[in-house]
Amino acid sequence: MTAGLAVTQLLPPFDVPGGRRMIGLPLIAMGTLVSVASFFQWRRNDQAMRAARPLPRSVLPALVAMVIAVSAGIALGLAAIGGGG
Image (cartoon, rainbow, N blue to C red; front, side, top):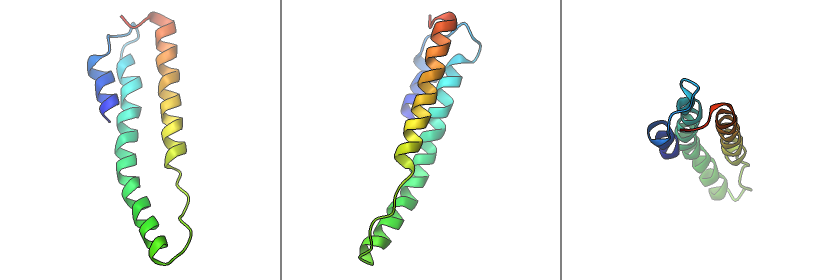
């Protein structure tokens, strides 16, 4: 969330209107989603450990990687189109 807020507030404006928000908002949304999903993942892990079962898989690392890749792709595209300031 902090990276998204920094992008939307501190990055120089792009020639494309709303360019900073195109990069920052997915990062903010991902931070919010990860904080909520992490609680539920922790709960599943806790239950599995108490029952001596294997820990369940998590989709969070893949989700984070995808959102960061998409945000980086958007940033690269915006920088190629009109520069960042």
